[in-house]
Amino acid sequence: MSSLPVSDVMLKKIIQETQKDTTLKRVMDNLNNGWKKGSCPQYYPVRADLSVVKGLVLRHNRMVIPQSIMRQDMLRRIHEGHLGIEKCRRRAREAVYWPGINNDIDNMISKCTTCLKHHYKQTKEPMLVTDVPTGPWQKVGTDLCHLNGKDYLVMIDYHSDYPEIAQPFNTSAAGVITHMKSVFSRHGIPLVVVSDNGPQYNCREFRQFSQDYRFQHITSSPLHPQGNGKAEKGVQIIKRLLKKSSDSGSDPYLALLSYRTAPLACGLSPAELLMGHKLRTTLPHLSLKTNTKQWMGKQTELKLKQKENYDKTARRLRALEENDTVRVEDRGMWERKATVLKEVSPRSYEIRTDDGQVLRRNRRSLLKTQEQDSQKWGREEIDEGRQARETTGPHGGDNDGNDALPNNTSSTQVLRRSTRTRRPPERLIEQG
Image 1 (cartoon, rainbow, N blue to C red):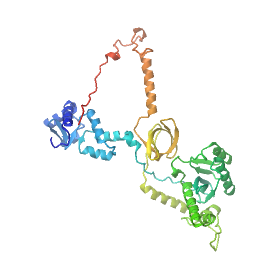
Image 2: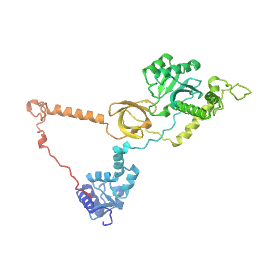
Image 3: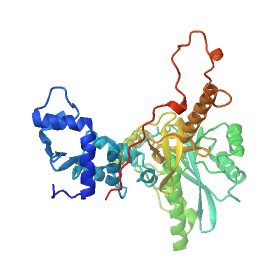
Image 4: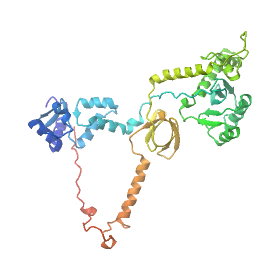
């Protein structure tokens, strides 16, 4: 016993609690006199590992903790430093044991407010491959970017990757809409426009614009740029072109023309896929004819290859359901609690935070927890209080008058609060 790394006070307390625990007393009796069939089934699978030393049950070199408030104290000690689940399990394997200890550790950490707040960023999910539009300028992505003190509106075609760029007079909805109308007058009105949830796009003016021009407007989840990945990629390309042109002092329009006429992996340039012919550049060409018949198959094959490479380090997250309790990621922290209202689109959910805000977030920004919904908890407490008042009557006391009871009421006396049997909780002494 002296070799155990535990203080005398703690050791004495564990032995005392073990003697009070009826289950462990039966375990000791089984170990000393032979295991009785059906006795202590939770300890039966590990019976060969158990021993009794001076009133203490051991599993190898691990102390078996009795089923009392001591287990909660041990869980708290195991989780000191707010280590992760695996490290806490390893700590427990070196010191203590009881049936279901791993599940208890998992449940404790899954409800730990501090651990949830500082949870790691969730893994990326497998790529959702969007269907390639069958024709040019059917589906368009749009986004805004800022470079060298100027704002730019970028639009990119999902079919051809052909980028359009404009410099609006301001970044309001009116400024964005004016330049989008100008682009639509050249290439036509697309069937679908994809954007983020910026104020320029998520407003009454843009909704009216989409109705007047008869296109479907799809928005991605806030704080999840991958949802508008085509436009985000286009923004990166345009910004890089403009930066290089500025640094080298070259013509930015020629740089833009070079990108539009450079062949993609499928062998055709964005301009060819959009317009059906090659554009004349400063490079000499023998022919400006083009053939786009084989493009669709190559583009689909390329997308599937990209998905295969992307999914190597991705893992699917479990879908959320209505009324699930979650934590919301905000700047790398998981402070805010929320409840799932509904799934808006694949991997995009509408949620209500504890302060009543209704938000939309991607699945990767939502951490499923086992915490109690505080709003639901509050409603339950209110309902319980209302039921208690209805039961006890208007004055708060038990309504035990015979004239208020129905005729078929049992004659069994109802205990009043003052006469209820109470058992005070057992409390630990100060432990070393």
